[in-house]
Length: 303
Image (cartoon, rainbow, N blue to C red; front, side):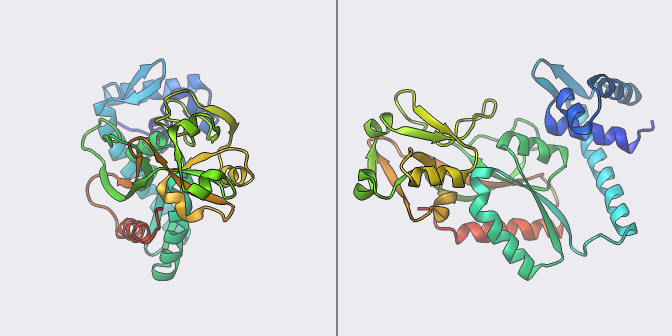
């Protein structure tokens, strides 16, 4: 059996994006061309590698075995090319996937520490949803993922072996209000007050929860602004245009014209920041990055 590196890269992109259509768009192929290459690969291997369904495509158990081997081969090819061209760092490159609600405070601290203590480690970051980062870990396109985790803290996916998970920190979800508001002066807010509030939320992404709205509201929220960027949301809050939720990892970045208040009259809502990676041995460079994430989280004020 012979496979080209281009076909193996295509397989990895499909696993990462979750569909033939998305992979075709990412690689500037037609969907029919992607389908033909996958069919040829499956015929060569002698087994089905992808399950096709209306929502996209997922790897079969045989497909995951194939992908793990392919990712190792592709990484070795890429590494050889960097050595040939003199661009291979001494310690290595670590690809870090970051969930936007977790990384804003942690990642700059981690990069600063690594720059001072391990300057030969190159960290390449990318932002994505928790679901997309999990796929990227499985497909081997990132080594480490920094992810926001919600109760009941289930496994990131149902594949075996499970991903290695470390809990970096856990804290209460808070509500950001304008510093000159009544809620800021009192230091807390009730569910009844939140029902009447104007909310500033993040855009909905597929089936992921809406970030920015209190998840335990007894009624539908009144969302007046939809903003992806956390800094923009907090600026709107500071000017009195609404309220938004803030996870514990962002508490250190709240500007002076915003206050964080607790919600009373209900069960506290908790959030975790976790670091995830593939099971098994990891490179020394990856271990340094994971350790730096743990240390940065331990020093991060969460409320």
